[in-house]
Image 1 (tube, rainbow, N blue to C red):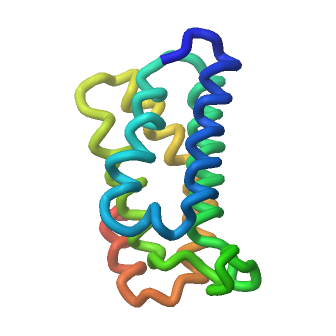
Image 2: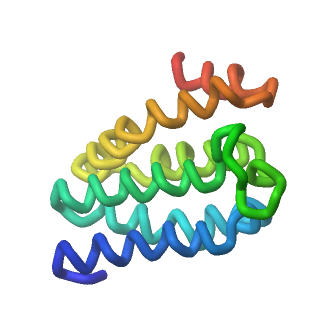
Length: 142
């Protein structure tokens, strides 16, 4: 990991740029879980609000890339990413929940990051046509 805050932010922006470049291919297979999320979650282990904010902004950008609004074009003429809301949301939310572990400081940063992207995820959930979305999100309310 880079030690300078500016370098860490730039490194996180590169993750979002890679997702933008590969588009829907990131959702297929386990690329999102295995290649995209680990560097973001590793950054949460570092202290500093600027890193947490950068991770939240990067995750928000990734969600926007993979789940564009209905009126936006995904770049391949299909209108949206190949994956459904749950194919994008489930790995992100599960990774934040599992990464927290026993380290209270990391857990607080994971919760703060989830809180930063939650309004965006809920907006995307409202526009999702996937019938399993209410059941999945309902599991977090209990």
